[in-house]
Amino acid sequence: MTDRAIQPRRSLIFAPGTRPDMFPKALKTGADIVTVDLEDAVAPALKPEARDKTIAMFAERSADEIPDGVEAVVRINCLRTADGMKDVIAVIDSPNPPPALMMTKVCSADEVLILDDALEEAGHATRLHVIIETNDGLNACYDIAQCSDRVDSLLFGGVDISAELRADQTWENLLYARSRVVNAAAGAKLDLIDVPWLDLEQPAGMTEEARRSKSLGFTGKAAIHPKQIAELNTIFSPQPDEVANAKEIIQAFEESDTGLVVINGKLIERPVVRSMYRIVAIAEQISARG
Image (cartoon, rainbow, N blue to C red; front, side, top):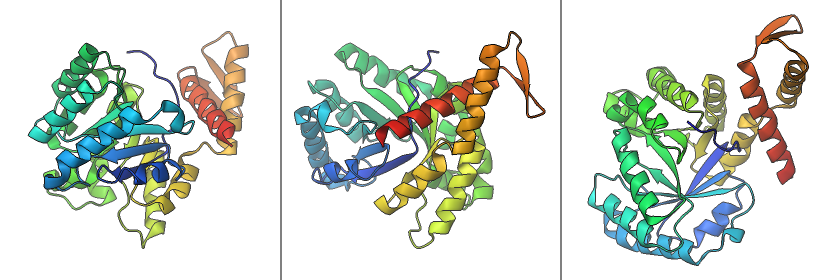
């Protein structure tokens, strides 16, 4: 497994594929990931229109039109459906495909590998983000995370998976499922994005859930409205004391000739250093954006 580029993936917002005019606006919301949606946000009868408009938009759009630090992604339909297959064919046939695809309803690593092979054959460098939102996907999430170097993040689809598990969508009910996906993402050194908070009238609930997610090991959370972005970016950004502590630990290990050091009375072993480098790298990228 190769090390992937470290970058902030604190927030994600969707724009419907039927409305290409909304994409430039979404790029300016401050979200780290902007996803054009061909799946849930599009009615079945409008999926061909959404597909055509989205593929045309990326074919005509220069990479320079995407703000620095923002990832542009297209959420495609499930590969096990006709619409999903049509989405993939449209991407493969495009001379200038979207820079990344978000895979939905994934049940196994084989699905990811099929898309990986198709993109490879077409000569496309398109990256992948995979939603874990089925019971089978949850069961296979560790293998899914490890199967392809194209995968940059996993996403926890809490709404769909709660329905599959026949459980209410509460933190306690989904803690096991979230933890399984945390384990999978960490094992493959992937970013991990949590399900959006759906109640815009209860922003405190979103803040609490986002803080819990970060504590558990998530690196970001999706949003359903631009007004949620700033808070999510704040929560999932390294705090000044975290950055200072990380730099102190890094310096101590770089100056040490052993596999462990003592800082402020605490024994710290070398495996901790990797996460410290990540904290500093993300903080520096956020700072560079201004």
